[in-house]
Length: 330
Image 1 (cartoon, rainbow, N blue to C red):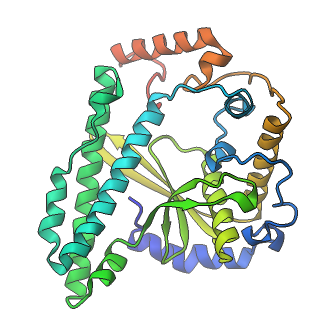
Image 2: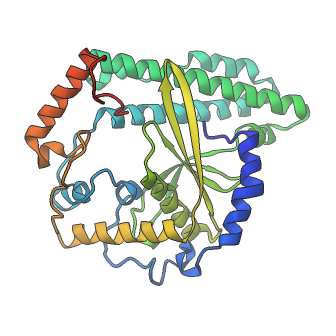
């Protein structure tokens, strides 16, 4: 899921990375310029990248409620599914690397055993039976796809480089760093950030999504790029948001590669400063004109709307031929 295809790698090498170099980035918007404006934080509110980058609530009242009022949100079904599937992807890739290191070139049989890797215990999540069954099917599809991809990548490297060493095999076949734990203090962010992945060969920061595409998702890769630059003093010019969808039992993957240029960096800093201001000064931004029915804080903002949304979703699930868009909340 994280690995670019040969076509995508060629696009990165010959088009996107050269384009990023041609555009350039203003020095004051590089992460290593954290000690001066505009990156220098105005407020002492260490937000997470997901709080800065998430624009699901148009007025950012979700951040105000969580951080200034200490309200607890109720995870929606998409968040629950995403958390479980993220964990499964990490487990499988880490275990695959472990088996390659343990067995070396003789690892293929051990990798094949990952096809039976235990699925997450979704029955313990307190979900409705239909939601649990859907999540289980998604987990099975993710496991089947990812294990097959791992096996194929390792086989290709072994076929091309029969004398490859263990460390080289991992670096060539599974070149991804997972769940990077980053300290965002220099940029006024949380000291306990976690980026989904980094492709070290291309130096591309990656965010994995199990839901519909949103333009503001690029803010997350931008935030992690800034943090990486603040820590390593090495440029990160390209991000990728990987979208995983499930269509008739099949996995469909779309990778949104993008240059992390001045516009995205300005946007991230503006979001950071505005949301930190709401929390620091305890300013209630008010309700948006329309609240997303999947908002975790809907019961705090519009208690009646949460019940109506739940009823509408239940009706849509019971009558899938009816008009409307009750599904698609993953």
